[in-house]
Image (cartoon, rainbow, N blue to C red):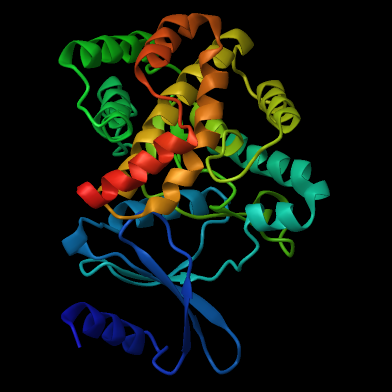
Length: 339
């Protein structure tokens, strides 16, 4: 038995769940893993296993969890923790992910999405924690670099020229400089249908269960709305996107013109980042399934770049970034074998 497994077993035993039935819960793209522990009475909890030796750190998760719960939002209750070794025992919020509920009953989609936007409106009114890092220009640039570091090289078989990278970074800087110092709120960053749970037995804002928020930063209020509506993992109808963005604007204090520009800018930056991440997950981390999601993200990117103020960035993308055709996607998957 390896040391990590022994520590896991010791943590479960010390938490009083040694005899529980254990099932694996679908994880995310990180090195964290999740298990559901079910005792003899049918009560269940979730074990998060976040190995520090793989650069995982549960402290940000715990901090944001406490902020959310202190403000009346439905993050899971923390039942027990071994912070140093990266083990958390969490309240089990169930299996009713938005993605699954909407797939089974599409008629409830507007209700769920409106409820999730109500949560964002609440989140944007709370006092921001003092020690959360800002979503600054350096962060926007570092994330945007993922497409030049991973997607373009694996799609074309060659590195991006230095002059092209400099031109790209200048475009990202110009666009993001107009928004990154305005309207700072807590942004959870992975706010989408596979990280939201529909808790029908609860009332109000607590009907929306929240997962995967350890990467939260202080940023623009458009960010999580983009994450929700321009979902990389499921198709969100255009009318739903239009209606929900309008609902957000109507119920907040944002200037519609500035917000629409910020939404398009953040959407473009975020989708460029995601395309790069999905290529990296394939080539570096041998997770080729993420490549199949790239065409959806590409479609979101094209929509964002249609904003007239992003014309110059659109020109750079049109010139330098290959469209994710089936042939290109195959090439990226093949690059995994050569890495």
